[in-house]
Image 1 (tube, helix red, strand yellow):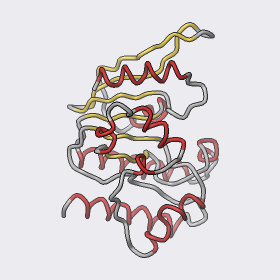
Image 2 (cartoon, helix red, strand yellow):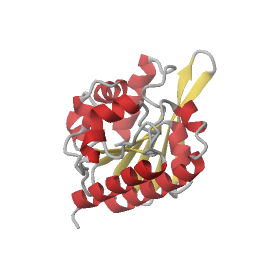
Image 3 (cartoon, rainbow, N blue to C red):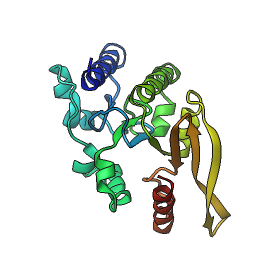
Image 4 (tube, one colour):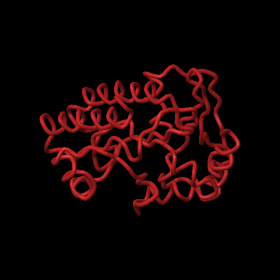
Length: 218
């Protein structure tokens, strides 16, 4: 089975679970990009966010018709806040973003993290998603992983053995310094976890410095 068929089957599996168990939830999202083996960079966010409208606009009709292909990198073609932030982050290395494999840690949509934490089936779904994300990493074997959100990284550490962690701090007027990123290794994979790029408390100057640290690291 080639890698695209594998990715489509995995998306189909997630969709069937959503359809049978959680159809009143806001939908699913698994891959935001074409899936390739040994990518230079894999980007992992927390969860898709949005609501039923986003699912209807993006994937619902395709999935209902049995089409689970992903051929375009959505971070390059959409105007969502996250996509805009990531294009800005990679503005000097757009090819790296274009060739990245992108997926969330949690595949099931919720409007925000607070809503997600109130979902009574959350633990069950998280265990499922964590297991599948671990499988995705093992299957694709990326050279680098960019984790969006330090909280996302805390979850990833529960199933991915990490070592050689180092915290990156930047100066902050209110608290003196602030942890903005963590670098680590997981086997041969280099990991860079950073504050979520859409976070409202990140200054433009900190975004620039985060970008500098990331591209020096990669």
